[in-house]
Image 1: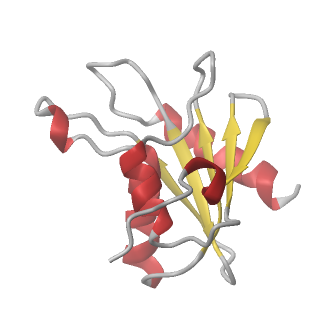
Image 2 (image 1 turned 90 degrees about the vertical axis):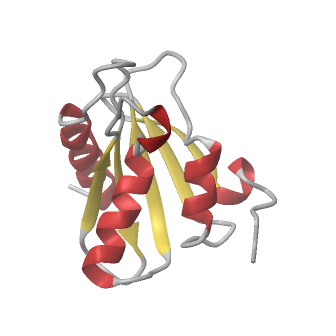
Image 3 (image 1 turned 135 degrees about the vertical axis):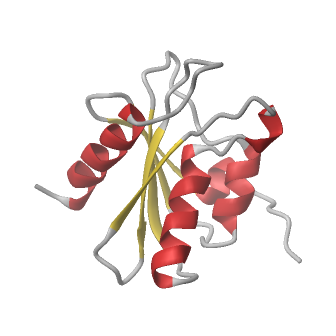
Length: 130
């Protein structure tokens, strides 16, 4: 099984644990840092104060940073059962950009397989840089 297939499993399992009582929109993510073997999962966690909601992609980044510190992402995989499939929101793209290069892969999947492949530059061509 290759790393993308493993990431899909990790993201799908994380999606099952999503806490989405308001939207019922469950999202799972898996990220891999360049030079590291661990796949970091994330799922969306909604809050009654909607602004306090954490998306799956940001949750995965936080898990990575807590474990190994800041690292460059090799790829991000996002899984939903939406039709059409959902790409990361603008806030997530900005956070991901802090740990990415323009050609970092963003893989969009349904519950069965990766359906779309983008780069960070495709989805966020002009990230905010401090």
